Amino acid sequence: MAKRIAPVQHDPVTATGGHAAAGVGLAPTRQDGDALALLRSAIVRDFPGRIALVSSFGADSVVLLHMVAEINPATPVLFNETGMLFAETLAYQREVAAELGLTNVRLVRPTLASLSTADPSGTLHATDTDACCHLRKVVPLNRALEPYGAWITGRKRFQAHTRAA
Image (tube, rainbow, N blue to C red; front, top):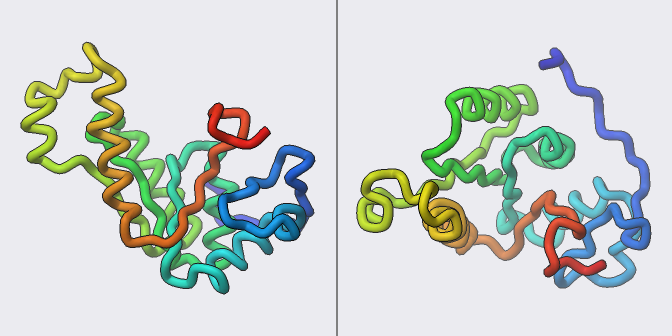
């Protein structure tokens, strides 16, 4: 990883160009414009202390993590640790967080009780991937998001039918 990461370039992106997330509850006038300014507004003004970033820490996620770190490195970052990740993935997550100076990364995990009930052998992923994802991702993330008034995700519109076109 590079020794220092350069500041984010403040290039405007537009919702009509398919790059900026419209976001539920954002006024139409705020859908177009500078992505960093939109994030800063959400983190600092609109939801101070009540917003979290959900991140996989994958290659596409690093840009968003970098922008959030520039705005407020203490912004909560929720990382879904399913218990099925490779050691290298977890090491990379820690390395990225340290390099960006993120000080509030929270590992989101399924409860031991839920695992012992629904997946005692740890093999649910081999027989029912939907149930496994629900147990190890959906339920823990929903629980982790409860205290927040808003959350940021890097999910792109084309990645789900629930996104606006």
